[in-house]
Length: 479
Image (tube, rainbow, N blue to C red; front, top):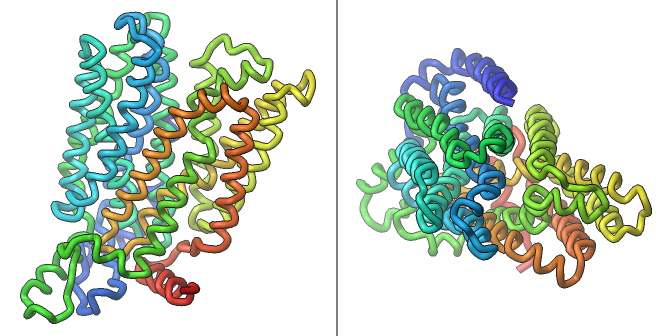
């Protein structure tokens, strides 16, 4: 797994070094000179900074930590509940506290990223990851662990917003999708690493070591961030804001300082929000985390004994990682919309027979069909909806509102994650797992209609072109 992630990073570095050679003169300065344009219109994209491969590798460690910290609890909890004598309610609280912290982190990270810059915010996120992991490793009881999980949640939620945002803003348009997908690869790699770490320390029941391993990437990220450049897009926007401050009042110049509520009057911003928030909710309400969190119990219900939950999680993690890697060359070739269509179709097709398999209606082969359906479902998610949501959230908002908009999308995603995680088992007990998975299939089909009708293609397009298309769609929409 680690070798695969390093190989991906090396390939990215090679591709970007060629770009650096072509734009060395302007990139060395970090940004193009600000261009006088209407403040409400699209802004020209600055040149990417040099040493992009290094910057991508360092910042994408935030994705690795995102995946590691959400996945490591699945194994650690097996031993935590014994050492701390946790009740079932307390076990659920240990898991959900990270999700609530992540929702808060996603909501609160946009303003600092806009005001202080992407790089400074990322440094704070790396410090928060480190603090949370230290607290978790040294936890002396239930409440200490809750505090650690909330701190880790703040870091995870903030990273889910700012990491893809930074990668989108330093990337040339033709490589933007691939670079953001590097973050998704390391996210899935982080989940897989956490499962393997859990497996390694399971015989010793050493949950403290499970958390402690995460300190390695968090410290590497913190050290590396001291040497990465600031986002050139953010620098350009700040330069334009400083120029607008020197203009007389009433000149029409405006930045993000006037408050974000007033921007909701802009139909283009509202349309971007509609797309981002809908896809953020769909990514969770289509059921992905029920498969990842509850795969062993689902397999057991279908007739396959779940004798080793950690091992089943490793299998799911491997499939998730491999298909995310497979998505890398497709993101900027096939495009965002085709991958979303393929992904949502595959997810719906897999979920329908999975429901029948869980009912036992498919006979002795039910457990094999359930395994195949789960593999197809996870593969379909990983190649499309998984990475594409985060890419679009970092592409569709205007520069001065990009961190704010991406933060709202991440907030909805984490809130939906919390709701689905809390309601899945009670809903399955009430109406049956089959009905729940058919509900997920219905969500995927409804999302397919939404994508075909509302989501624009952003492949290889500069930010200003994406903005222009969203504006045209908003103005042509029925009143």
